[in-house]
Structure formats: structure tokens, C-alpha cells
Image 1 (spheres, rainbow, N blue to C red):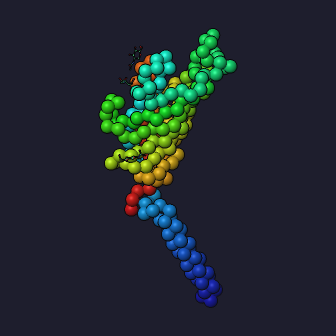
Image 2: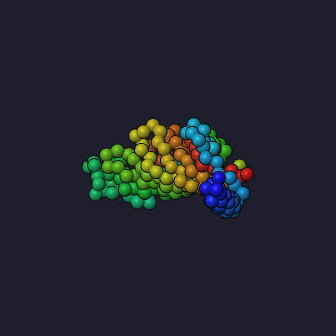
Image 3: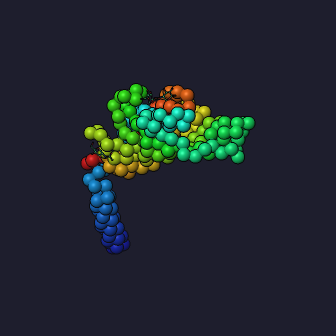
Length: 210
Ligand SMILES: *[C@@H]1O[C@H](CO)[C@@H](O)[C@H](O)[C@H]1NC(C)=O
Ligand SMILES: *[C@@H]1O[C@H](CO)[C@@H](O)[C@H](O)[C@H]1NC(C)=O
Ligand SMILES: *[C@@H]1O[C@H](CO)[C@@H](O)[C@H](O)[C@H]1NC(C)=O
């Protein structure tokens, strides 16, 4: 019995210290999250938030000088002729090295005129010699009655795949500290100057208002 006493004292001290540390930890967490509480999905099929939106890339057509009003996207570098895989004198056949900057509309349905959801602001560049392939980095800027805030997406757009996943690496506002995956598929293409992507955005870490 006497041997147990110091042990109990030690146990008590450890528990007391843990409670203090836990309390400080929680207090800090709450302060940083401004009243929000972290919810982490326990499995892939049950994201804590999910939304589908359509990305419309309307490229500036430099063959005509009259479509500046409609275009929301433009190439700012030429494909590199040094890496040409064809005899074309104008760059190369897979646009390798071409960087496109965009401020594209995201809508809730396929039609460009459907309800606006967000702006997608960022860039992509083509990064493969043998086939079309791109790399994206952009922010979804939400400024509607439903959501205010941003989501940041980045990753390889492996264009040969029917669906490809971009990482949702963070967020702000209504998407404070969010993380997840956006499954992307090409929904429509019209020549070289318009394409539409379907984005199925699934968040697996959400800070929800407590
Ligand atoms: C732009 O100009 C081209 C060539 O003149 C014409 O075919 C096309 O319809 C014009 N587009 C718009 C949006 O005015
Ligand atoms: C703008 O571009 C979209 C996509 O190509 C097209 O559907 C729409 O008719 C264009 N609008 C104008 C005014 O040219
Ligand atoms: C968000 O929308 C409000 C109201 O329409 C507008 O005043 C504000 O400038 C917008 N902010 C951004 C960043 O677009």
C-alpha cells in the first residue's frame, strides 16, 4: 500500500498537467479558428462538404481582334519552338511551354448563363511534349449570398484521363483551412478557344461554425 502512494501522486500530477495542456490547446484552437470547429471526414465517400460547378475557359482568339469582351482567358507565352515535335514553325503541336492566365466564370450548371458560383482565377501551362497535358494552379473566389471566401486548387491535369484529381490545398472565409480533392472532367470543347470542365469538389477537412 505504501508503495502505491508516490505512484498515485505521480499519476495525479500527470493527469493534472494533461488537463492544463489540453485546455490550453483547445483555447488556442478555438481562438485561431474564430469560433469554428474542425470536422474531418472519416471516409472517402463522405466528404464534409461537396459541390459541383462548371469551369468555362473562353480563350482570347488572337486571330481576330474583336473577341476581347467575351474572352476571360489568354495565353501569355508562346509554345516553345525548341521542343517542337512537329514541323510546325509556330511553336509545337502540344503547346509545350504555353502559359494561360484566366479569370474564368464558374457556374452551377453547364450553361454559361446559369447561376454564377465563383470566379476561377489563376493559370495553367502545357507541360508535355508527346501529348496535351497541363498543370493548374488557381483560386476559386466565392462572393455570393451562399458563400464568401476562397478555395485554392493545384495539380496536374492529366488530360488523357477521363477524370483527374486536383488537390484542394487550402481556403479562407467560409472555407477556412479547408482541404480536399476536386475531380475534374472535360465536359465540352469547341475548337481551340473554348472548353468547359466539370469540377466535383469534395472537402475532407472543414472548419464548420460551432
Ligand atoms: C470577329 O470577327 C470575325 C472575322 O471578321 C467574325 O467572323 C466573327 O463573327 C467576329 N466575332 C464577333 C464576336 O464579333
Ligand atoms: C462567348 O463565348 C462563348 C463560348 O465560346 C459562346 O458560347 C458565346 O456565344 C460567346 N459570346 C459572344 C458574345 O461572342
Ligand atoms: C463582392 O460582391 C459585393 C456585392 O456585389 C461587391 O461590392 C464586392 O466588390 C465584391 N467583391 C469582390 C472581391 O468581387
